[in-house]
Image (cartoon, rainbow, N blue to C red; front, side, top):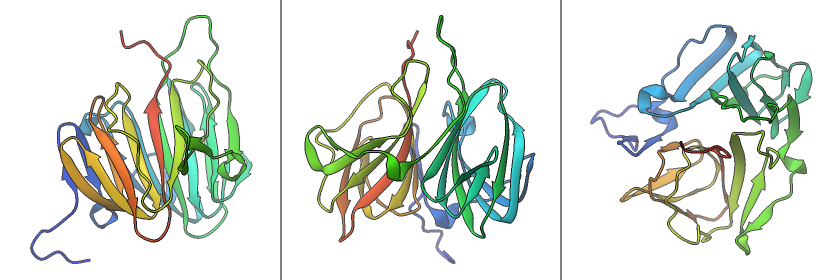
Length: 243
């Protein structure tokens, strides 16, 4: 879409950023072929993790090694094999530090969401192992007792994990019960629907495809608007001492 006056919903501030698909700029990533990567959140923004969206052709492929990092990958649409495990839309994979990986697209127009960060080891606790799953098989639980705001936790609740990835679904009109202000950092992708996100002291309209970065202690609140449920997937750092 042409923006002759330079208008945009994109916002980049010290404590948060909002990126819309109209402003996504492709990158080139070593090890990835027949695909278009978009690095949307990174250390250049001030974040402690990387959030990447990758659009793969039918023959799209990515290979490499995690090294000291860990990767969580979510199939937004299409089909993709991760280390030969076949995943459809809603499928996800966790790749621990010190592991090799291979992603292979099995369908045209496959899109992957990837969260990557340096793994923080914990004394007397082994790092997690490679795992895959399907969000359709994960129970959606009412958030703080509200059946109109439902949460799915995709990774096990274990001290071995220093990241969590969840999916929130809100019925139209549902909202977070209070303005959250906490130590955890977030990276978020709107999967469906629309609403308004309060970020710091600003109220931002958001919709399917938008990406949000929230720094630690950034005040945050969301309400779903429109006629369909709003869904987003988000990352947060967990289970480690701040010192």
